[in-house]
Image 1 (tube, rainbow, N blue to C red):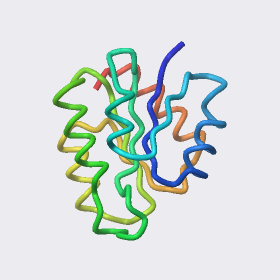
Image 2: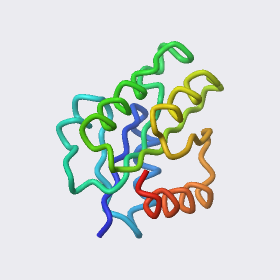
Image 3: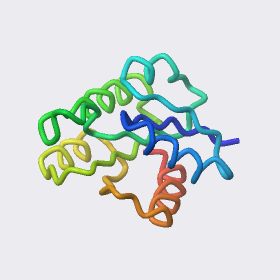
Length: 125
């Protein structure tokens, strides 16, 4: 089964995404970068990353971008989708320039997310 690692610091959002996607994919959950790195390996087919991983610093924290850079250094052939509840245009552009397949705004539209995951898996970006 296709494996997706979801990195999001908001546990309720992480759980909701897991419930929504777990019928079609094996979900690996992480709530911080260290946990995400520990759980990352070649068996992960796609990464879904929240840009802001510190809700106390909205619009300032971009640690999800740091994880994206790490992924692209260590798993460059794996697609990554980034998401954010904050309208941070610069972070979105940076993520796409670093090789993210797509940027999605929260709240996530599940149909859009599912079709984006399928596209990302096909693209291998």
